[in-house]
Image (cartoon, rainbow, N blue to C red; front, side, top):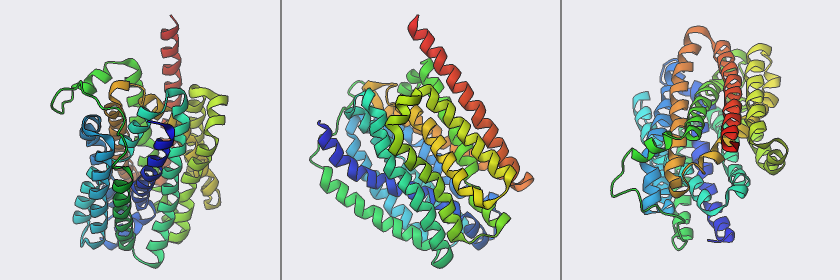
Length: 395
């Protein structure tokens, strides 16, 4: 397949990714509103985050090999259709339990979109061009982060948190239709024919026997646990501490996405100047500074530049790990990227639950300090592991 054809399909796949990320991030400014409507604490309401992210991670183990076997585009299109329906129905729930169940089902469907697309990119771009290609694809994701938080704040303040889910569902269903029409004649890229007739855990076990794979998988789990587990509470923190409007909170949370957008525009330059080790080290440092500054300075005016700094740092580290994941198993990229995404979102789901307990029992400040320090330690460990793997290869 030529890169021109890849570009055509990536435009549609980027639109699908935009909706998935916007749907995930829209909860951040709405968490306080949903908690109040259903008369539960903020930490308890965060169950809807874990209910989405944990199945999102778990079902990577199904979608990855399935995409390798029957075709990645087919899996993405079917998953996006189910995601659209589940998201729209969230607008009509009457209690937190039904919302939790629907977010669980929506997470199951959403699992078959972004990671499978990354594997699709891996099938069609050589490794030396792949990080730049993934960086361009990330533009759609970061726009979803930016507008997801902003739209959540606007709907929460002036319309209804329910309305945004209905809107997202309708738009996602439209994209699914266009995606099917636009890509049904395109070749689906590499398919694995060596994994047998059934879906098993053996390919994942084989991956985890590789030292490099273990490092990437452990790293992304801790990254998801700390970054998104703690960042989920920044919207509620801004509301409780500074009594800001939900519109203002939504726009402020979009700073994280703006940092990612800066990364996507500068990715080639950053890769050339810093290399993979530098991107991981600097990225972890920026995230640590962002979380600690939010906790210690307690000035809402600083939140936007600090969240941009955190977004830039996150994508520097995460995109590097993501690129490495696409090369862990070239003959079965869907499986490798699925294991990567599984750990990212399982980490996020568990992190949201753990940091929720910290918020309810000790306060927001301890939550953000713990996340910042942990991310700094993670970046140091990843850099040392990368250097160790390089030394082994040179022997």
